[in-house]
Amino acid sequence: MAQFEAPDFFEIDLLLSEEERLVRDTVRAWVGERYLPLVERAYREGYFPAQVIPELAELGVLGGNLDYGDFPRFGSVAYGLVLQELERGDSGLRSFVSVQGSLVMYPIWRYGTPAQKDRWLPALHAGRAVGCFGLTEPDHGSDPGGMQTRAVKDGEGYVLNGAKMWITNGTVADVAVVWAKLDGEIRGFLVEKGTPGFSAPEQRGKHSLRASVTSELIFQDVRLPADALLPDARGLGGPLACLNQARAGIAWGVVGAAMACYDEVRRYGLTRRQFGRPLASFQLYQAKLVDMLAEITKAQLLNLRLGRLKDEGRATPPQVSLAKRNACAMALEVARTARDMLGANGVADEYQTMRHMCNLESVKTYEGTHDIHTLILGRHITGIDAFGAAP
Image (cartoon, rainbow, N blue to C red; front, side):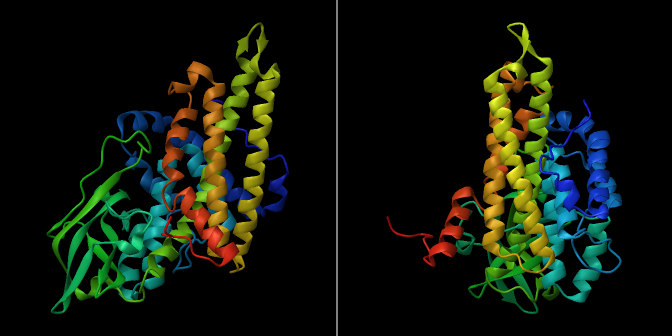
């Protein structure tokens, strides 16, 4: 595979610190040298290459955005650049890291007891344990507040019943952060692998995110001790705060996928000849490259500003929604266009574009669909909540 050349038309590198560039370049090199040689087979056969987990831990990217103990903490921009490079490899790789950090370690760090933090955060950071986040249900995706999973108090502990679906890492997870209604209020629980009544069958038959583990979580009279409850998470705001962390990371990540597609199709156009000329010499081909570069550049600048706002403690959920909505739509359009520009070769796994295109169909959907983020922004603009509005 040719050496990746990242588009940086507006010299955004000059706006980054030396540390931010070093972090990005380290992960960029690792993705190119270590992960890309593994991913096509993993995608074809439908598994996550788990041998990279210790290497991700060594890079410090598992929960690298958290201020805890002696963890090496990345700033929001540096962490975003990490996720950008990981998703340049594959959305499944970035999803693994996002779930581990933003959706498992973050709620334990923010809502957990000192004992819960001490038990789980070092193990998750070191890759000795894997986590998953159980919010989405078979009948409740965009409307998590309608969840049917229930916990009831039973003596000193709790009994959990219900099911979750489309859960990244679920089958291989050592601990699940599970959201359930307790006395009508949404609460978070830590459910350990092997707990009687808890199972996590893997979901097969995916055309997207094939190099990622996706699972159901099933709870049948699962008895949990009192210390399984995350005490400081109450209401829908708990899981939504976690999703807000993940959504910001997705905005960065999908730009990496778009950059990979753009770089591949640009190179292809310079070497592929038709009608006696390189494809890149034709006006339509050039126009499509220009549109890709323009949209990638706009997303890069938007993400950079979001990262700076996060580091200043000023980023708002609607701003995160705008970045996630924009970047996912952009990246998917870039991938679809690039697939078309590759012609018949675009469906061959010798080229990465169609893999990214299929993955991005899922990434545009999870952590809030394009339309849900549109409604979040519409509510922010108008002050009117259009969720569930009657036709």
